Length: 161
Image 1 (spheres, rainbow, N blue to C red):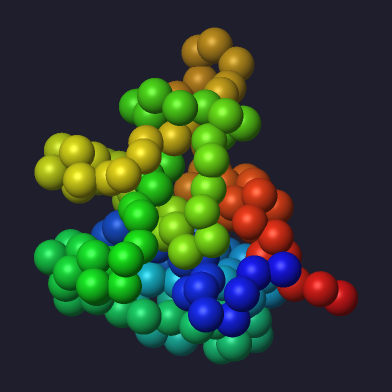
Image 2 (cartoon, rainbow, N blue to C red; image 1 turned 90 degrees about the horizontal axis):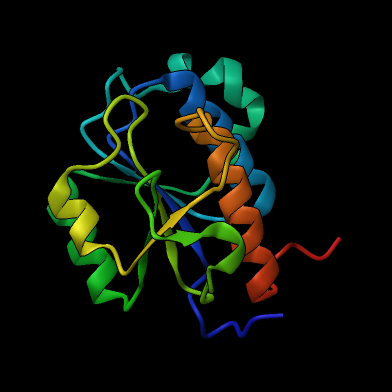
């Protein structure tokens, strides 16, 4: 179990495009007790209607912090001493070799464009999920679940039930 003095792992979404994926991810973070950061602008009107179908009633229980833009998010992460761990198909470290720390932020890029070069270069680590040859990427919600599960497992932050 982690110390109450350590801020918990977070999941962050960089300018997400698809409300259904965000709803699914908010359901994931609510169920696992992980805060979620949304880095705007979003590619959809952020609101209950767009998120409700995928997030169901779980999304209302999610701990969400919305950031006006990348600069505001990055300043907040730096101020709180958090590492930014980018999940990217261009990552050099496979997920099963990655080492997570308790207060990391796992950052997911937008569905259509990932993250721009300045965000990619700012990340403290760039991790990919190994896949069969010929495939580009997983759905962002699936990838987020895999990465978050591994991070929580390594840092002992899964809820005790």
